[in-house]
Image (cartoon, rainbow, N blue to C red):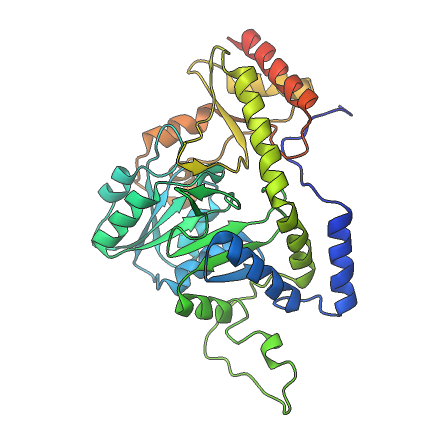
Length: 376
């Protein structure tokens, strides 16, 4: 339908085009250049971290985080189960084994009790996932990690602008990873970042993200011809300066984008709060939810596929929430996560982005109400 309401949509325009033009004028378009440096400084401040590293995607950030934390083959890393499989994949890329922990039934992040129960002598760390951007229980998870001598990583793929008990996402764990994919709250189409307060972690991650040597900008202006030496087999995980320019413009937009998404979430709450067969997402009072997605839970017995078809037939786009990772055959895991497995079958994401108008939100709510009545 020509008037279809998109599930997600970036907010981009003249500001981003002007930022790209500035990068073009600079002559430095490739990765880890001066515009990346400017973005890293600003993003570190927003994330409340001492160090930020711009990378090409959140999967790369996760892999780097595990590498600098010292993960090696034979290790186990506990992962909050309800997440896009990039989280578990990063553990596999490191030669380790992901052990999935079940989730809280209300905010869908890792249940601290399940995390602690999953610890074995092979466990080296924990990756907590901020599901759809709402931060996990970092006080409890930090206590567990410290008690058992484990590292703690925040998978904040959806969390730019979020906070937990007054502390911003990016400052809540030993390392935090972010995504700037097109459906995230701020975006360059792709891209990501890694934040940390640990200077040694930051330096090693920066070296690894450029094949194992210092980025070329560190040799700019040298009076001789410095030739770097490779002592690590690193990766090409750099963000281009073109993307960094876009991200600088997106950081300017961030407060407005967060406010617009919060308004959409509040409007959904008022329009859908009394609908039978539907449970709305929870936003806890002690944390700021950035509303990367708006995911509702259908009652048992409601045919999600039928609801999805009904919405799409009326031009309202929708999708699943995310994945119960332990059910994905790639992991061949023995993890048992019944809460995650159940919600995986009942979650439905409806349109959420900063460009939605009140009329569009009302149309989504009205259509969902009608479709649910037919599906019950």
